[in-house]
Length: 247
Length: 247
DNA sequence: CGAATCTTTGAATCCTCTCAAGTCTTGTGG
DNA sequence: CCACAAGACTTGAGAGGATTCAAAGATTCG
Image (cartoon, rainbow over all chains, first blue to last red; front, side, top):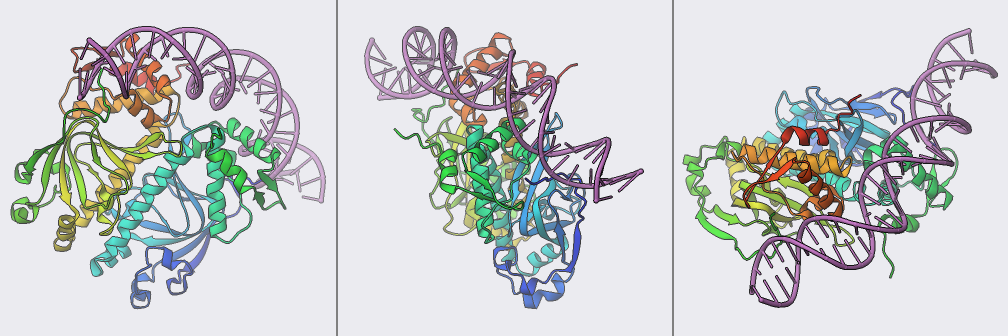
């Protein structure tokens, strides 16, 4: 099983300037409708990074100067509770953005800690670029609003799927989410989250998560393959996720 | 105690054209930074309504042609779960908007059912107006983004405050929210929500809500005054809300 | 006034949390 | 390279909390 502790020895890797022109997922991102070729000079300052699982992308309270586009992997945005525990308020998947509040005003601060849940590739876009794009191409605001909207969807998913029902249902739904993401990325196996993260996502204690995960492994909902990946029984998990009370 | 069933005999009352110029809460809304006087012709189609508690404001799936500004009262946005139960995904308070997804594209549909939780005054703004405003005054996009951002805050509040911790904590925090809203409106007493709504807000069964509310009344956290209002012990509720484990 | 709906309450069950101990993993330093 | 320490995960037992089912009060609206 994988360890997602924040103390991983691997480091954030700088991968140089982003190559938006050849970006494989551009059509799913902020720049979907943009003539990237014409905009090239403006986009030059965009940098690309690779974050190992567990690495902090940005911290709550810091003045927000960048919006982060996830190209690959998965980020979590989380808040610290009064008792020091953490609660994930949304997941940011490939094509979506983190730190969108950087667009609000020039001294706005990030609302959350953003951390890679799985090894992630992220483009770091200075908010200035997005402001300029919006000035020059008002249509770009439509794109921005779609991204705000998607953030809302992500938050609603945390409420409706991951914070509602029994522990077994919540965990099953979270696993189905990971499965959907893996399949969208063309992978056959999933990378599980750590117990801590599952707990912060569902609002349930780590021990309870651990027990349900153990049950899922016992009943072959999840099967450990080599040490990198886990294969799964999707139909089985779906039964747990949406408790169809068969009469 | 109040009944918030959707079958109230009172009806939605049309109150004619909105008078933005003399709107008491304009400075908290979409039009905070606008020269309303100059814009008057454009704003003419804005209508004002009064919804009794329990009335549907708009329905999920309907083509979204209006954004709704809450001037007074409280709205809930809710989703239907697979088992037919409801889950509130955010509260919309005075100054904020509901149905903001109407801005996305001309045939977008509402994401939720929006219902008045407390008697509400609402202005109904055709999305066209907001589009035109944005075209003519690009600064207006900043305002729109602030409103998107506030929607996210409202969703995060549902996650972090109303869907985390014990039933007692969740209910206490929901009551503190109602208290804050009442005080912001200059009222000394609060209007409780129905058990159904508290349940949909917290993700807890109606029976459990009822038990905790009974406990709060027994311990004088809540005291029934006349039959319209309830007074409260804020400090006491805060202790329940943020379980300060006194060592 | 009466039917329908909502709310309250009880009792039993089941689930989840807490606390605690034990196991496994990982990274560090000798 | 191995041993160790720190942290993460697992598992158990018991207590406490939440849900379920059922029935009895309240309210509300026609």
